[in-house]
Every structure is written in structure tokens, then in C-alpha cells.
Image (cartoon, rainbow, N blue to C red; front, side, top):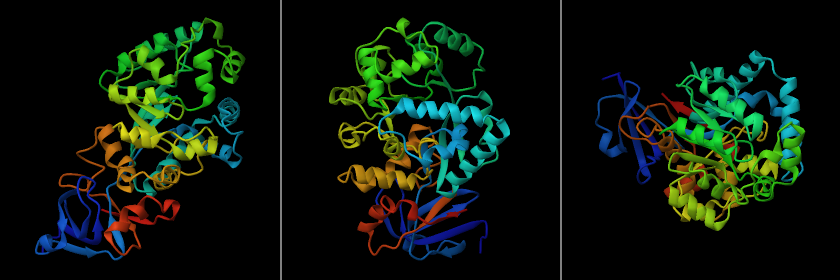
Length: 399
């Protein structure tokens, strides 16, 4: 027997790039998948064998939006803010962050969050942070961290300071913008230009307060920015929604990832589709913040690439993509379960440039795959269970 190879059999295998396999098997060798298919076609292969009962082998999951630096602030999710009050939540966040700024404690909490992600079947995460050294957080972890340094600077001195800081950041550090309401036109364009062909994720249309500020220049966000010393009067109010505004700046394209995208109009959905931009849905964070429900079904109908993210522990008590799938289906009962599962797996892997290693079960990908307990009777129930069980999901890793 060739002990360098292993054959894993399960009642169901989810390839992620083709039909569900009933009584399937995955052959691994040297840390990679060597073959996947029906057990009947692979049963004669010489290999060490392991059989699973009432379980399904799935692709690894990919979390396309998190803030690991905010992991020490999990206590903020103990009491939900006033529904839709983004500025009130930000005030609480900044106060809590000032009280929890000791770096080692921050990074210890971030590493614990990474461990939670891995325990939940996640092998890659797009992480947004404010410290360049946070790009090293993923070292030694099985969950890969794709780090983006987030910059802010809306107008006047704050924008000029951020532009000056940007010129001194090492070129290998991926930089991105925070949001249209916190990053001015010159800084937004500079950040997008610096990104080149790399992914450019930013918060877009998360709350009605953001829309009010960009359309009128007033509202709670204007007041909050003034409190923070931002020269709001120097900001030229675009008079349009977030998506149209970004497009007017020339930063909306197939490498732009719009995170949240809750308050978008039908014409903006069409614009996202026309530009090829992707959207990261964060139903758990949106529900906690009370900002509304993103029009995911309309976006899917327009062919917009959709992925899922958990956001941070400061706005979501769970770091589970299984729960994000569950909440998304509760918000949009007509979404096909297969499409929802793809948002948490193959779509995210493709967006992060990992399609050859993660997000599917196929020859050549990493053999570290989730094996999920799935008490279903037939193949028609598999995706329904995987996308609706939420935190009831139990899994182990195929290594």
C-alpha cells in the first residue's frame, strides 16, 4: 500500500466547480488533492483509506472582509447600537480602542480570532487594518491573511497628511481607502492608482447616514467629522450616492470590492455590474448595526460577483461564515443555496487570486479541506443544510 497517498470517502463531496458527488471520494498526495470523483471510480487506487459517515467534504471557506485589529473590542457587541446609528457606534469604537491599545494584547486577540476562523473552516481572510505591522499577523497560521492597510483623510489637512504618509509606505504593503465619506477625491485616486491590478476593498454605502452626507453634506456624519477636527466645509459635496460617486472618481472597476453595499439604488446596481465591481455582503454585521439589508438578490441577478465577510468582532459576535450564509438566506429566502455557498468559498477564492489553491475540491488544490457533519438523507438537502445550519455546523479537517 502507498501510504504517501490517502483516499477519503464520504456520502457527499461538494467540488465547488461542478455537480455534487454522491458517494464521493478525494485522493490526496503530498498536501494536495490528486483526484476527486465517485468512490466507485477511485476505489481501486492504492492508498491509505478513511471513510466518513453522515459527513460531507467541502471546499475551504474564504472570508473577504474582517478587521483582526478590532478583535479586542468584542465587548462592543454586547449591546447593539441604535438601529442605523453608524456614527454612535464609531464613537464607542474609538473610545474602546483608546482603552485597548496595548499592541501585544491587540495581536493576541487577533491571533485568537484567526484560530476561530480556522476552526470554522476558513483558510483565507481579507483583513483591513490601520497598522503596517499587522500584515505579519498571519505568519504561522493555516488561515492565510491578505492584509490591506486602510487610510483615511477627507479634505484639507487630513487628506494632505494621508497623502504624505502614503508616499512613505513600503510598496509591498497593499493600501486601500476606508470609505467615500472619510477619504477625499485626491487620496481616493492616489490609493486606487497605487493598487494597480491588486484588489481595492473599501466600505461602500453601509448606512443611510453615509448616503445623507454624500448627497447633502449634512447629517450625523457631518457633525461627527466636525467633532473630530475635520474641515468638513472644505469637502466638495458630490450630491450623489456612494457608488456613483466612486465611479465619478474613476475608481470603480473589476478590482474594486465594495463592502456592505446596503444603500444602493437600482441604477447603482446596474453601474456596479457594468464596471465589473465585486460586492462583499456582511449580513451579520449589518443586522447587528441595524443599517438594513443589502439587495443581494438584485445584485446576483445582475451578475455582480458576490462574496461574504464577517466584518469585525466589534460589530459581529460571530466569526462564522456558516452563520453569514444562514443570515443571508434569512434575508433573501429565494437565493439559491448553491449560489450562497459559492459566495463563501469559490467566489472569494477567485477574488483573492486563490482559485488554484482554495475554494474548490479539485486536483492541485490544498488537501486541507473541511469535513462537515451533515445529517441529510439525499443530495437535494446538502446545500440547504450547509447554508442554513449556521453555528450548529460541526466540522473537522481533512489533512
